[in-house]
Image (cartoon, rainbow, N blue to C red; front, side, top):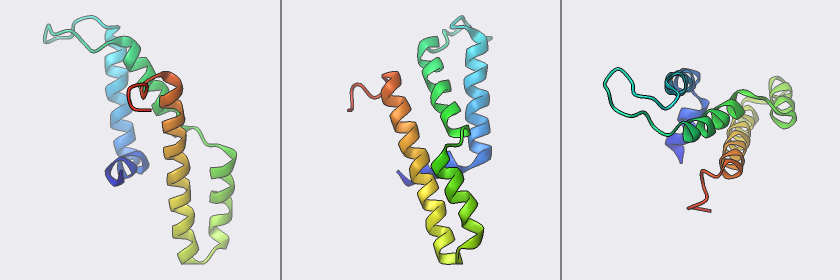
Length: 105
């Protein structure tokens, strides 16, 4: 869970994942340069939808980020954790809606 949280909050990692998803999307499910079949386009669309939820802000995270400069350092760290948790909840909710977690949940 900690590793997932670290990836989700690292802008460079998110950029790389988005580029990878876009690369697969450009293939439209056809074969790539290697001649191997690309993963199911539907799954990639679902993953892309999940990734887009990370870049979107919501009212709660915007409020926390707006209040953060007015908090003591200790509470700023707690605010950062709260934002990370809200992002994870958003990702899980979107994944469930897209049917990616149907086997788990």
